[in-house]
Amino acid sequence: MWYNGLVCKPIQERVIHLVEPLFMKPVFQEKIWGGSRLNTVFGFELPSDKIGEDWAISAHPHGKSVIENGPFKGQTLDQLWQDHQELFGHQSEEVFPLLVKILDAEDDLSVQVHPDDEYGKHHAGELGKTECWYIIDAAPGAEIIYGHHAQTKEELAEMIQEGRWDDLLKHVPVRKGDFFFVPSGTMHAIGKGIMILETQQSSDTTYRVYDYDRKDAQGNTRELHIQQSIDVTNVPDHAPELAIKEVRKGNSAITTYLQTEFFNVYEWLVKGECSFKAFAPYTLMTVIEGFGYLVVDGKEYELNMGTSCILPNQVKEWQIKGDVRIIASDTAKNNK
Image (cartoon, rainbow, N blue to C red; front, side, top):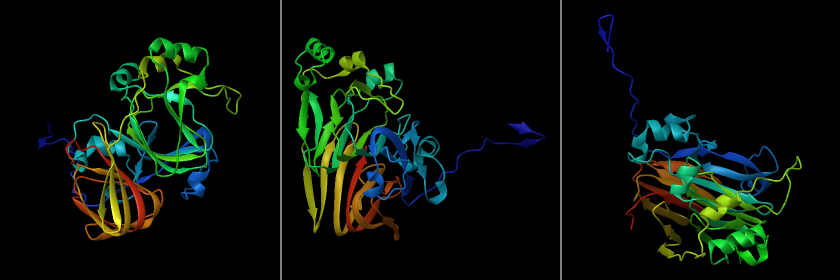
């Protein structure tokens, strides 16, 4: 455009070649079933003693991660996704596709189900929600609800309306180190005494089937979504089979838990030192146990329990030192 004889060009976002991790500030979510173990176990300073979730890596409107370091310090992850696609290898998705949480279930979560992408976009205006869980810790006798026994939609509706929860729900005992894949349409609930690392599509759409008739601090019961739950629940229920693979590297081990169209999930168990190469446009990682260092481009970054970061597209290799357990994820389609 012209202005007073001068040629003026629109301001363009500066492309930054960033060879360092993007560390995320945790976003805490208060829940009726939450507790304080994100403080006692992970060392986070919590705003209350009913914190159920740390949204560790999120660009979702209900809890956006803020970058803690480098040239993007103070910006939110959704801003970077919109303005700096060079960090992510120039992806086509409108929104950052993943959300990583740490959950502390001081009490039972509601029995619930999530829609697939088609139903979610049509009815809730956002992605569906396929997720997976790594069990960080579990009290003795702890269990999850993972699936149901109904054989038809009619039977499902009847059992829900009659409150036949013992007949309907599948209870599965869990222990530390277990891993579960929870595709959209799976009826599920995390039981009391369990901490998990959840990797999921970036969605906050949940259809609540049953909430134990409990009331919040104001004496109100929480909303149920019976018809939507019946609409989206997979019938009959089929638990997905996992093809877990482990590769040893000296005293360390890399475990591939899951490779799906939505995300791939890994455990990096490092004892000593382990080197990595990027197989994806960008990689997410959260420390769930131990202490160590992440080494990128010759610089060391401290890794404590709960530390979460994204390794952007420009980081092609890195090392991890120490005694540390990390859950990592990416969206690579051909990362064999």
